[in-house]
Length: 119
Image (cartoon, rainbow, N blue to C red; front, side):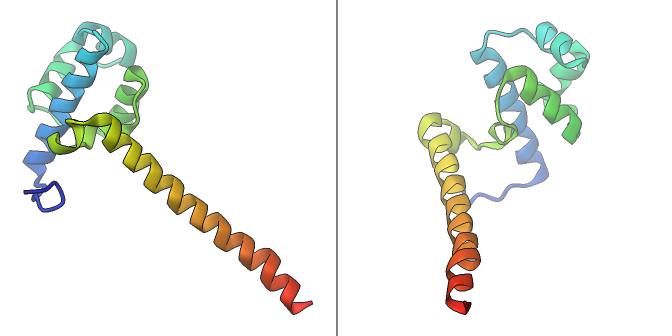
């Protein structure tokens, strides 16, 4: 089953977030105590998040992503997406870049080409 076909219930999203927090923290060799100090959260709260006992607010996600120097969406990548992170991350950035570029081209067309045709 692909990640798009998977049903993302609240429990699954919490598990994905918890697993990714622990993985991202471990990759940087940062302890829960260090992460707690960097975010202003308690060690117990970090442990509870990683053990799926607590959930997080958007402000907490912001603090965690800043401390770990990652984008917030990286906490929500499913196992399938995070097994080959460079490809998954590159695809996300490429899609975002493509959307942004298309919007810019469309706006420029409207601004300059249609204005020129009217004059």
